[in-house]
Image 1 (tube, rainbow, N blue to C red):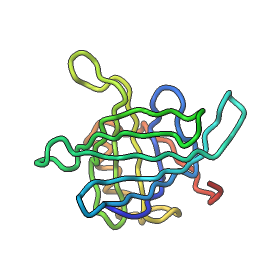
Image 2: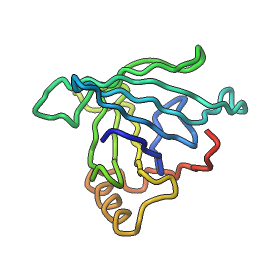
Image 3: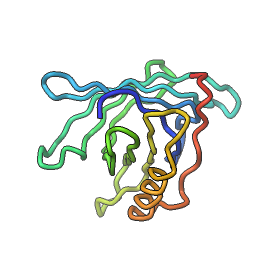
Image 4: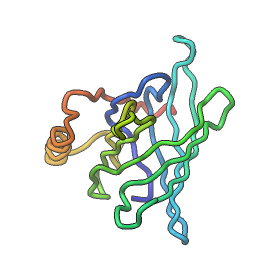
Length: 157
């Protein structure tokens, strides 16, 4: 999973979220901990578009389900948010695509109240048709078909 990923599509949470040119570089340390540095553009106050840099650390609460992690993140500027989300890698083939889902807040019954999802590719120009079909199938399986919007990758982040 380590290495550079580019967001091709996203389902936004409520509130402020990265807008376009979203990428993440994941690193797995010798002790197994994973960190990421993410970049993207965000629009503040409805008109001010800035580049946002984020840093995140991941922990795996249950080693039997390593794809379910807890992500602690920090915006690398005072006007960016910090916090923690449940973070799941829904599906990946490690070489072409990854589908992630993160939950920002839970309802009383334990289901997700506010979450977001990203579809990542190793290639900023997109996925081959065969992989696109796999991703669409997974979106249907997790009941999120039609909820994603494309993410522009213009190389300006």
